[in-house]
Amino acid sequence: MTATLHVTASTHPGTPDVHPYGLPRPGRALVMGVVNVTPDSFSDGGRSFAPEAAVAHGLALLEQGADIVDVGGESTRPGAGRPSAEEELRRVLPVVRELAAAGALVSVDTMRAEVAARALDAGARMVNDVSGGLADPAMLPLMARADMPYVLMHWRGHSAGMRANAVYGDVVTDVVGELRLRTGAALEAGIPPGRLIVDPGLGFAKEAEHNWQLLARLGEVRALGHPVLVGASRKSFLGQVLADPTTGQPRPAPLRDAATTAVSVLAAAQGAWCLRVHDVASTLDAVRVTARWGAEAAPAP
Image (cartoon, rainbow, N blue to C red; front, side, top):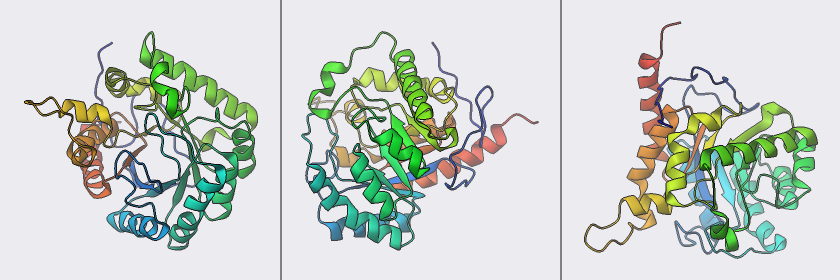
């Protein structure tokens, strides 16, 4: 299928104009800044592992204009092991509490219902679950009770074994179908439809070509009827495109921000609701420009 790029400020023909309750509506794609409170992040190598450093980083992202600050205490890079629930709580709760007190709209990036519940109590206003409720059966009931925005990502298993699950017929059709099952389960659990956000899960049980196909056909993910979060920032498929022409070595993660910005523009132009990124300032500039361009490109009513 050939992707068609429709650039508009807010709505796209044939897809619903949806937005989660209680979150900003600035007339452009939102920008979510990443705060990894882990010692083994693929992107920053544990630079914000100490709570004080993580809070400072989150405040810097807020100063740069992040609409949402996403705090996570478990690395989900391919092959990563899992911390205990106690360790994850130790990592994220002080950071969530401090950032929320400073006025940030905080999302907690967790697969555990216990961590989500404690983070919400500490001031988080959104849960970003990369497992889409599959890792912890208590998550969907919790989110139904909490009545907060909830991100369901496409997921096929924990990081340690995700590569073996990167097998698809048509990746976009398969991902959309599996996300439809997860949103159905969430609705059945009692989560209001206006609280649900979907994420195609770039890099999670997906090879580089799968990620590119999902990005090119993002409209099919939007057709599920829920806002779409895209997390492409600094991921390895970008490093492969930017590989050194002499050695073939992929470009290191910290040097992939310009490529991330390009992907963010293309995703925003296809109607992505939010971009999850490490470098907020460049992405915010990019989505502002994309929205302004879209205002001119949109067909007259």
